[in-house]
Image (cartoon, rainbow, N blue to C red; front, side, top):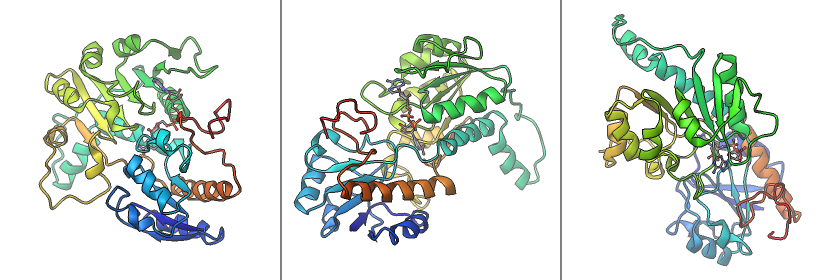
Length: 343
Ligand code: NAI
């Protein structure tokens, strides 16, 4: 099988090379992202492999189909960048539903601790032999209330870690996880209660029409003054302009962002020699209480191995006609799809 691998980065190759050769998969790596202009690079490929910021719209899907590509393998969990409805009946879309929930949850905690204990400031100060503690006062996580939106794989690992710190959890999910609410340290509440009662809010739900800008001006108004917002899920869950306004108004105490709505042209690339055109991002980064990492929450050795192994297995399964990680046109995985009729 021939695989055209888009948006390839040096850290992707070792894990994919290690398992693809044994599976008889020949990979051509392309640094460019997949979109209408680059789709021709898939000529001769049986399958394409893409990541979070490749563009897989109707036009790209139609051209891939004309080129003879049968399978689109996402090497990530989210598939909001794929027109799955249009792909139905044209391309099989497979994904990696979970590669390391620990990687993402631990990164969310790393951002939180960095922010509230001012580690990012301390690192810069002590390198300059500035050992002053002025302006470095943080707060204990113990005893604080954290609101967790989305209690799936990552959200639940994040909750476990928070409980270890002695925090209380207010959880919200469209489909609450059975047995998670213990009536004490973890309670499912409405979104309104979560906004009103949380000192810290962490987003772990997927990006859908329902969750688009789940954090906007209205929800930020409903939050506690000084709330700390963590987003390691998808950028468009947060209205960045509203967040910026709330930071300026001192309503939001700190923001930890691993993702950003307009990240696709910036993140994963070295833009240090360029003038940043995105004024909202530039202003957010300039804030002393905002930490931005460039969609790196997934980036651990364990996750990269799991991504490569699952993607290769997905491609082999699809060759054999069925794959549990296929995404249907309603956006469900085969394993979750009750009817199976849409595949
Ligand atoms: P999951 O599918 O296990 O959990 C998602 C949870 O969100 C589910 O419990 C689901 O019921 C809930 N949900 C769905 N619609 C909702 C709504 N309207 N309101 C509230 N909750 C809703 O997914 P997992 O593995 O926990 O991943 C969560 C998200 O994390 C992914 O969708 C992805 O966007 C993001 N992610 C980010 C990474 C990064 O590197 N920054 C890496 C991997 C995932």
